[in-house]
Image (cartoon, rainbow, N blue to C red):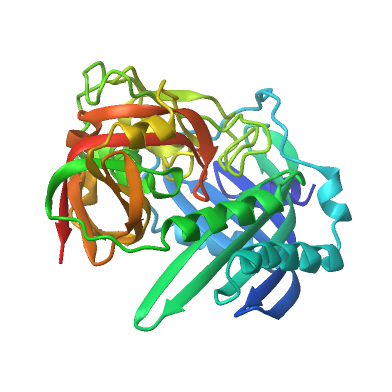
Length: 427
């Protein structure tokens, strides 16, 4: 492998080295405002090298596979001014088996991708021809080769496949944006179900409804769950914990959410977007429970942060970030959540992640698409509405958790979650 040769060259001066070679070949079809906008193919190659030289780390990257000598030279130069390291590159370990490659993705041609996009738009258009639509299909084949100076070597191959349909419904001065999408590593994606879900979101918004300001129950659909998860992503990041920036520092073994809430980082789910046998540092992936029945049980670490903290990497490197987050199901159906609500809000999507202090859990977001619940029924779409609260407070005030899970576009497998007494601000 090329990466072995790179490591050998680096080790003529360095005390440790690791190299990763990544290749991606992708095709994507995109429609914009009902018309085919692009049909592109692309390929990319990147090599990343890390070295340990005299106890300091250096890293560099190139997209030129013929620039090996230059890459090694630059990385060694960077290391002279690098930070002190607190880790050794890991030896080879057998990784758990996880499926990330589907050969049939290769068989999908551009004509089929165009037809699939068009079919999704046709389904939405059959509901309302006035909706201007954007749709697309994307596929990719990815490969990675890894080697380090501790004898760890492996190669991986994976696929990616996804599709989406979103639209704008303009009624005078009112513009409604809605849609749906899904991606993973397998060819089996139900494009008709995606389009029908988009239609459902438009249909729920046919009427508009006024919602009063105040505290009330809020139902977060899977598409909007990141409003609550941003603080947890940052809070369980081992680097933030080590630096003392996380409010969860020192709270392992303590209750931090409702006991019905459990959260796991799981990179071993077959065909999930962020799954794989190893992380980018050559550490085997593992399932890491973060919250069990409301109690914080683990943080996420990469090699460097684990070394500083005196613990082991959880296979979340570099960066200590989660892979696929999984929230356990509850026992309440989505329909029952609505039926049990006298007045409340369903959040489908928000604009960005708003203002506030995410690492402390504070959030304040504008609702892009939300629906008012009145006396157990969805009565229409709300406008000019904001949602404010604190993640940790909200997750200690869970009213119910859905009995079914769904992937969102952010790599989260989650049920619908209903929170009581969140603050709504409406003009």
